[in-house]
Image (cartoon, rainbow, N blue to C red; front, side):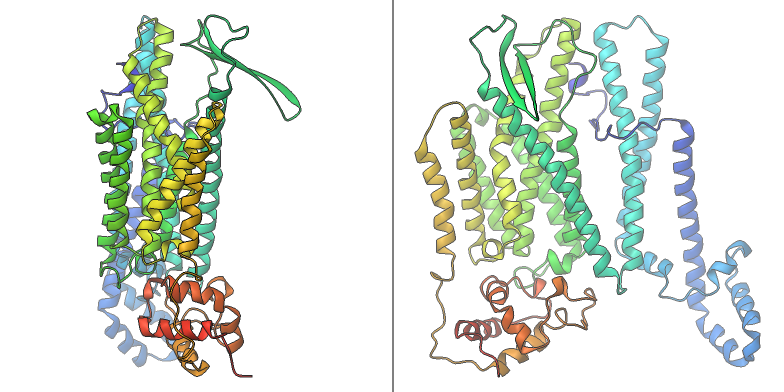
Length: 584
């Protein structure tokens, strides 16, 4: 089939990052592998030294007491001799206590996973580096290649080069970020560093996401507004005049392909890939690197961090395969039945995840799965179809009509998933949605309502105005907002007065560990978002937020780390509903 299915290579790794300039000289790869090997060698050497140092702590302490104060240098030398390490490392290892960076690194539970992942990356880099060299020699040594084989070879060479580049950059970034994580872990800078890391990756995710969604919306607009009748040449499907940024633009869409493929052809794929990559990075930073606080809620399911993370990753992988299997089944021939099956699948998934994870994490995993489906559609179906189209135009060979049909179906699915994904990601910052008792139903209504709005939008751009679809879809979301509002939810009668002293005791026992000028929490060394509950005034000023986060949605304390009880939440709620009065 040519380059589109990549049947020669089981991994089916396509282009991820040709935004970066190629660094294909052999010395770059050798330097990378050599540096990585030295890094592992240094860690292994330091680990052995650190273990021996800890074993001989009593000997060193005895010597320290026995020797006079001016004999410190002799004591250090003797300690180094005792652990029997290479002299080149002696000066580095002598003062290493158990709380150093190296000891933290080797006791970190994530290290084995990082090493395994890094080893897989290095092996993959070497394999694709070898493949690149083989393909390059093939192109240079055989000038009689047919147009089809020449195109296939060029595509595979590009994919191999880009795979080497992207994995090299990802490996370097992963090592750097992981070492930073280990370095700040347990220090006063931990919360600060993670906040900045979260901010930078989130910023990148939003930027590339806008690029992807914006390009998608733009091409849908073009398709729906093409002039298909007036003065259109036979080989064209339509054209369009536009004005933007002080200039006129004229665009043409071909029915199949131009008679000659231009040398510079712009592809719209990297936006999707980088949106997914930054999204997964953000998922790891926020939810997996601190699973106890953000992924797990013991009151929902008592999971270990490893189990919870494994369930999260399995959700993304299994979810994609379930969706892909549905698309390859006879179900795809009936859009109504396919949509119904998709709704049932999302409903089951939402219910299961909200009964396994922290509610906020459950919402984000549903959104992440939908985003994975969208990126997977681009990677495995849409881009291969486009490459097959280019190949057919270059070689004159017939095009497999099934490829275009499947790509069109996946593109349509992405179109309808867009608004639900955006809404889920936004709602994730508003506890009234994910923190509600029936959060899985809220999630389902958000998905259906936003998909319905997109359906109205698609029809409207084709000149079909079905306002009832917009009314029903928007009405679903409005009714949802009303039904989950404080005005409708049941409240405790004012006949049960609450004194501030009761509330203050709860806050001192459950909240000030983080929200204080001097936090005692093992993670937060500064009050999150600057919110403090050290004084009655500070508590009263935040009463509206407390009502939402701690009382109605149970999203504070995070992961219920301090084990606030339901009775305590009710007491705080009654105090706020009675006016949040504090002693004067």
